[in-house]
Image 1 (cartoon, each protein chain N blue to C red):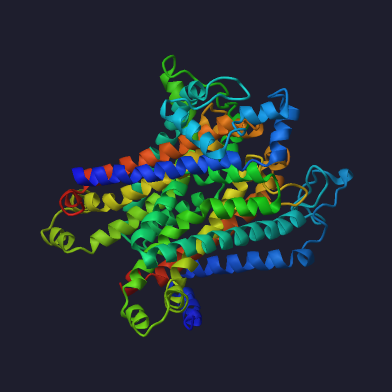
Image 2: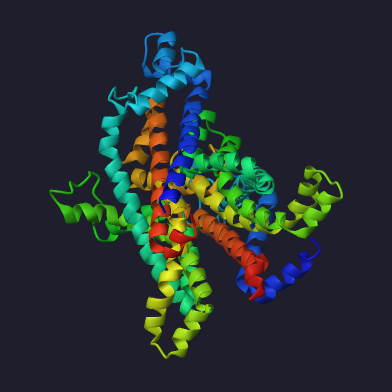
Length: 282
Length: 316
């Protein structure tokens, strides 16, 4: 993408909220990468003597019922949430993108068959599908990633399919086929680069969504297993139990989670407005 | 119109078969150690062979599928391993609760999303637009179970009021019954309403650009009349299409709300079935949820046809 710098410049000028979202998203990723440096304590450093302390100078976000530093756990939670979010999005967009592009490009029978498959898959509520997969795979970080990624993959394919349908009709596709390029070459060299924009839009909004679904799955008892701290897990387990006595246990992970989702959502929205040619023309 | 309907119904057959195949595959994918765990820990059977037989895993695969499908067609959804009751009798109890919750939440989502979407579109990028959109994104960014927990804890702390744990009978106390569903439905509705708002706002903006709207303004019609009479109907149509997708979302969300508010619906039954490794129950529930989504999608398509007369002539 040659216009990456231009997109960033336009984003800041025309969509300040989207730029804020981009900063939040980038910040979250950086926090996830440098969690070890940023967190003052080990995320699993228990000390019952300092359990349930209020936020203060030594423990900025207070401590939980096992005396663990909530600030460090929120920082490390970013790592889990970003890992789950990015990996599940990669699976989902990869799978959904492949189906969408193949379905849209080849059309006819391939499209008919693949779209029935998509119909069937989309008939299952995403959260239910995720629970089904988790029940089969058993608990674990990678089970959560796989379950969230696979359960939502097919709904992503629709958007990418419609983008491919538009690209397929372009003269350069016909020209390329006329000079004898193979379908796979056309797909890789001409179709894929032209559907990158919708893929980025879908991915950004989806990332926020996955973080929320991870939280919901945690609440239902199928999230990333302890002691690894995930925001959803912190909110739903002890956060709910100690909601009144120690509200900081749920306020801070809740804020971090909402901030991340908010960031990815507004970023996705702004990118859609900027990259969607229909809206750009107006 | 009739041809379209026939086509739609015909296309549903392969999809239905695929759905059934997928649900069937779920059962076959249960890891072997889970079967032995069910046998050992939960006391469902006397021997491992009997456990496999109870799960229907002892026959050849194609025979298993045909048998199961045959049962489904005769309305036999199997029997719960845990409660020993037929799935159908349990569904009959649980389905109305889930339907009530999801439909109420979608109705609230349409109401909230529709009204705010239209209001936001009247002055794009004005203060009302920015405020309403920010609120919608905020609702979209908060986990529903978290809002739900707040909605349970705060009133009980400050007002001494807490939601009923037992299901209030609709006939004995209709208002109490509705009140019990209103809170979870509203929480789900605010979450589901954000995409509705985005869609209806975008559609209103699109419609506002059309010539007939300019004509309506030029005729000197009142703002209320232009917006409600001329623009709304055409903007509503595309918005209806996302309701099918929303239904799947609502059913997923209702799992969380049912567990949180202790409503005895299909979602909480599903979670119980997973916890008890009650796979026959689980299998049928997943199938029923999928059928429900498909039925709503069909209904949405038909509604679409009914609202937009153009489709009746062109879109066959």
